[in-house]
Image (cartoon, rainbow, N blue to C red; front, side, top):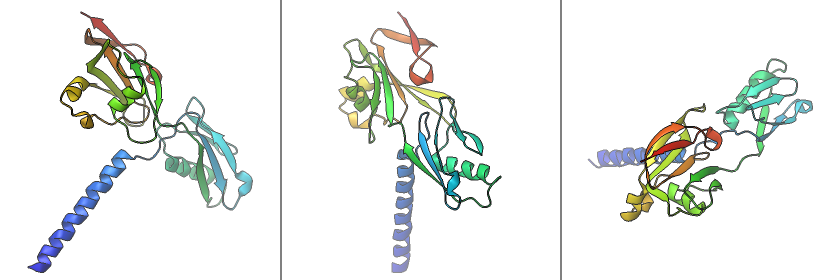
Length: 215
């Protein structure tokens, strides 16, 4: 009986560890390369091919002697694998190390009815309310009950938009339940008189902003 109890406890502990590891991975995904990032590429046995490349505005990085890489949605590990694939056409069993030398700081864009709209940098996990506070907080004209949160999905430029009622969280004193934002998310605080969103024209780096209809 004791053996069965111990085995059950061990299984439960392993399950909890697995859940924690999954939760950590979801909250701390590997950095995705951005335009302007600088990568240091080093070849262990052929240092004459060492080079530093910068990701251009078109998401391309050109390797001297080996061609170009489209970096959209790539992590550093993905980039390294692609460098090895291209180098393998010229070199024998290339041993490559890629170091992220310069990178864009994690940030979100906070737009609309906030006091200081624009880019907000952050170093650790922050909620949507934290981001709005860093952007100077809501204007009196801001609709706390209708805040838009936009973020990219997958590896492309597709975006998902969620309409959030932050007023309820504040009124119910449940601000700890505010969703966490991700790097490059866009937050748009609508005006308090708005009741319908119909057309997208321009906003931040997503190239989209919400044009509402006022009733």
